[in-house]
Amino acid sequence: MDKKDMREKNQELILCALRRLKKSSKPNLAKETGLSVVTVNAHLDALIAKGEVELVEETLSIGGRPARQYRLNSERHLALGAYITPEGAGFKLTTFVVNLFGDVISGSEDLIDTVNLEFLQNSIMPVLTNFPNISYIILGLDGEELKGIFYTPAYASLNGIALKETLSAKMERTVVLTRDIEAAIIGAAKLEGIAVNENVTVGVSWKNDSSHIGIFFNGKPYLGRDGFAGNIGKEINTNDPIENAARALSLTTRVLNPNYVILYNEKLRVNDYDRIKEIVLKDIDEKFFPKVLIRPDIREDYGEGIYTLAASYLQINEAV
Image (tube, rainbow, N blue to C red; front, side):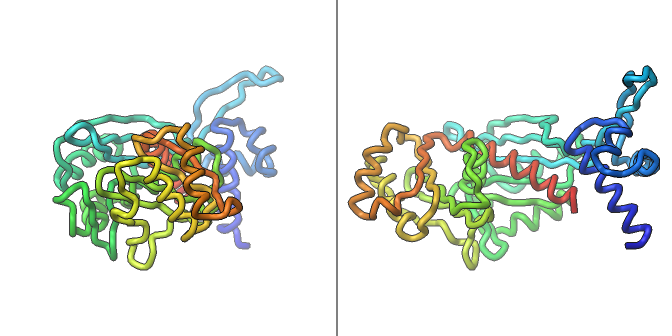
């Protein structure tokens, strides 16, 4: 390992320690990293010069001498999370900005009548102006990209365009599109303590004449050959929410044999579980019955999932 590689490795050790600690003195950083105080001091000066670390305060140490405290410049890189949900006869756009510590430093909600490309651009650009250090935009929508072209039953004007490519070029940022059901699964997993990377986790959402399945294998969404996996059309739509849930559960269990199935429908209630299980067990053996979560309102999980994606995507790419 040459001097440059060693310098980069040591600086990354210090940055990782500051991510964990949020704030620390030089002696404590030396203890956390295994580096000498002299080495930590030299690298801190370099990191401060690059704008990656900042001096925040001085506190009294045990010996009575001031001890300087350092922290990661948490706003050096930011992520923007944005997602759209139905609201009455229209829609609601929720946006928030996340820093390197996962703190939400800004947020807003806007009620709108229609969703189109111009609206998305006009809503996002002012946020980028206010927070120019935004590097990643995580955008949650009801729809999916098939071979780079966006298709959605919810927003007619977005159908058939290269949405991610167009927005990335316009915003000059990395844009990550995620389906609402997939973001909701990530949110539910975080809230319920489900290890998505260790399980097959499936979410099913249905409303009116559309039904969608989100599938996670080994922590990653499964989209199929062209991104079309998970669209099951009218297969589970009846007038009975319990019958719908049983159909969805039976279908996903027989085809995917998952560890967890999350059922999203506003007409379901948690105490419907026993009746749903009773119906499903007429179709499959109980030993194959997965763990089931019934969550009538998808919105909380959806928002939590967008936040989790924004924070984790920022951290993953920050560490590269």
